[in-house]
Image (cartoon, rainbow, N blue to C red; front, side, top):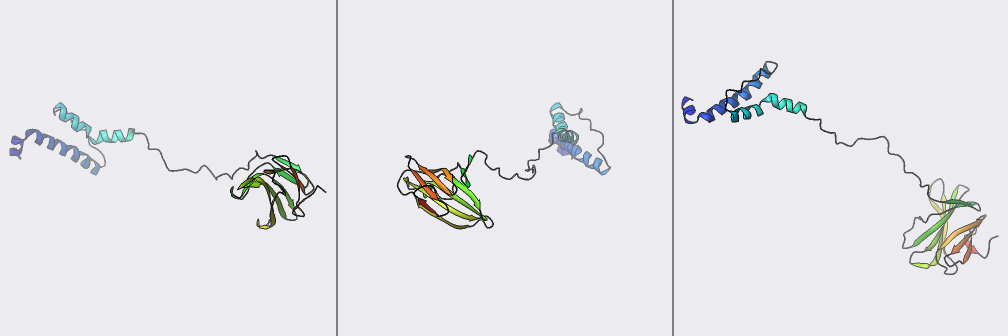
Length: 204
């Protein structure tokens, strides 16, 4: 060991010092706490800075002063609210039902392009008439009539009818009872009888 000190004095000193730094906290912990801080003033400035930087007390102080890590796990803010029904859809009473100013319809755009619809609840069923045009021929007005069971929500009847003449897309503009007035893009007027499920010459 004396020979090692003579050949490499600096390495020997650093090795002994590092051993002391590592051994002191282990002994202190075994005794139930850390012993007093070693005196590093006897070492050269460069070695003293290295020893102080690796002192377990300094490392513990740095860890205690560090801010807590944020919990990045998602937190529930309560139950997810149900989807809100759109309040922007204009509704107007018409005959025995209601005109809904929305083009939404459960059909592909290639088959049907909606303009608006008329609805009525009757005898446990929902009667719906979608008005618009043929998806592949905008000049051909088209209506889709559906009867939907209010209990099973299944379609139990209905019809798909083109307007008698091509007048562009049609919209439900008025109703008398269950006879709907549909107006084409060019101003042509048609009448559709929901009860009869066909176009008629005029409102009854």
